Length: 247
Ligand code: URA
Image (cartoon, rainbow, N blue to C red):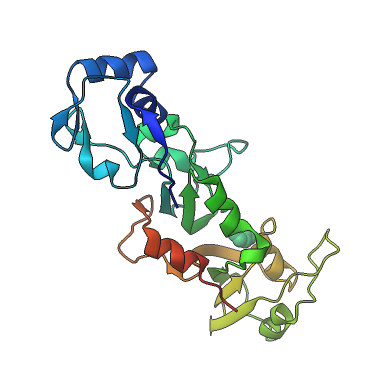
């Protein structure tokens, strides 16, 4: 995932949001940055930016933040938005404050509606982001859906057919899988990300989604112990699960 570019120490720290070049130089000159236990007080020192750097560098008494190539999963709470254009608190506010100043910036991998909770991936790795959202990767997303009215009975077949056209569109949806839990509750797995897709799929059947929660992206499951509002950094094995092709 991450290449190993070489960066000057002051550039590295300022890209990670620790301050302006001037501010991080003060930190470095004050002897507050160590690598493998040795103080580095030369702000021009070249650093190999590898994944293990976060475990080897200490800045002002704390391990360095993850270097670029960061990917994480957030359990997005209801009422929090992925878009700067929408009113309300942003998902970025759930991450450490310093991370908002990182360069490259962290973005959401696709979006969840303000009224949808659950597994949201975020990364600063543009290539990874495009790989996950590219239709060619066929990354599935599973939603736990609660409905206002009982299912009418033909939804599994209708969604699987690949013929359903949403209101205002002219291209049919790709086939989607649905598992019924009970009359007003189902899991729906889709491999596209059209605007309000799951809500509009049920609207097309005359129903209304009252709660929507994403619990899986590709083969990566939202862990039960990751509470709403919490995040976890992903490792290579997690990312391999995300990209694991599913039928
Ligand atoms: N479908 C929706 O309707 N909303 C989401 O947030 C995701 C999928």
